[in-house]
Each structure stands twice: as structure tokens, then as C-alpha cells.
Image (tube, rainbow, N blue to C red; front, side, top):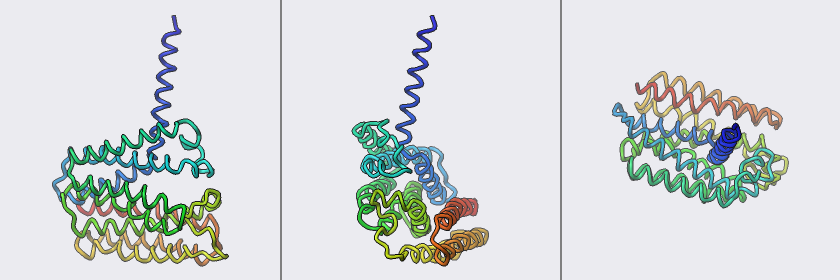
Length: 300
């Protein structure tokens, strides 16, 4: 009498597990950040004409396109993921999802997302989102196996989500979304290089050049970390000087920029340790959401 409910429950649990595994392919935390920055760009571009339906469609299409792109990345990098401690338990190297199934899922999600944006938002937001996917998969991903300059290339698709959001709101682009692009571009360099330092052993094992692998007791990425932090301090303040934000934003961006620069300088001047790199990473994690939040609130 109790066998059928037990079988149904088992099948439901298996289905939930399967859905969770495919969701894991989309890197939910990264996708969530893409959605937040895209929505911030849309809100800033809407300029008081915020349309909830358009915003919802933008988030749905972006979530599908972003999740599909990140799943394709995991398909492409399944061999190197299997070599690294931090990634070997991802669904494909852990053999919870077959590579061909992951590939089809990724392609369908990506195409569906771009098509959804094209049909429900506008062509420009779909084009910018397609540019994100193409540059991430066909420029940044293969360059990771060749040169640590991949961080500069990878910062381009990482900085485009607010531009896509602005395009969704306006149907055109101006200086302001490119300032958002510049802030996110510069922010990513200390962030990604600090992560490369923290997981240096993993990346070396997989021969991925997130940081230089052929160093001679030198750290050529360190000037980039400090230099990008200094330029970010300046570029981060430009929205206030150009009239796009107010004094509260200016004070916040400068204070947080200094908070990012300080651990970057300590990293360069002190001994090379993962703890020092983590301080840079944590400072960068706090900088971006706080600056975007204050910029959005300053528009209210």
C-alpha cells in the first residue's frame, strides 16, 4: 500500500537532484551578479521611466543567456576543471552530467536567452548580450591557456552587463553606460588577479594562465593590481564630476576606492602570501555592489 508513494517520492527527489545539477552548470552566484549589474544598468538608463515588465523580461533573457554561456564554458574547460581541487566536483568532471547533455543544455539556454531578449526587449540589448557570450567563450576562455593577459580580455565581457541593461532601457548608448563599463572593467583586474594568486597551485596544475606561470621570483601582475586600483579610484569618481551622481556617491566611491587600493599596495610591498591576496579579493567584493547601490540610490 505504501510502495507507490515511496516510488513517487524517490522519483521526485531524483528529478530535483537532476535540476540542481543543471542549475549548478549555470554558476548561480556568477549569474546572480550578472543580473544585479544588468538591472542596475537598466535602472540608471530608465531615468525615472522604469518599466517592470521590460525589466522582468530583461532578467529572464539575461539569466538564460548568462547561464547558457557559463555552462558552455564548463563544457569547454571540463578537462582542466578535472585537474583543479576547486573545480573537480563540478557536474561534468564529477560525471554527474554527461558532456553531450551539458553541451545541448548550454546551447539551448544561450539561444533561448538571446532570442527572448530580441523578442521581448530590443535588438541592442540582445546584441550586447551576444557580445558578452562570444568574447567570453571565444576570446577569454582559450586565452586562459596561453597568457595571463586573459584577465584584460576577460574583463570586457565581465563589464558589459550594465551596458546591456542601459541598452534595454534606452535602445541606444551614451557616455554614462561606458563609465559603468570602465568601473567594472578596472574593478575586475585586481579581483581576478587576486583570485589567481589565491589558487595559484590549482591553476599551475591545469596550466591556466590566470597569473604568470613562468615567473623568476618576480610578480609582474602586481603593478597591474595597483595600477588598476589607482585608475579605478579616478574613474569611479567621474560620474559625480560629470553630473551623473551626487556628493554622497563621490564620497562613497573615493572611500571604497582607497579601501581597495590599500590592500593592493600592502600586497605589493609585503611578502607574497595568499592571505594578502585574500584581502584584495575581499575589498573588491565589497567595492562593486556598494558603489552600484549608492549610484542607484543617488538617482532616486
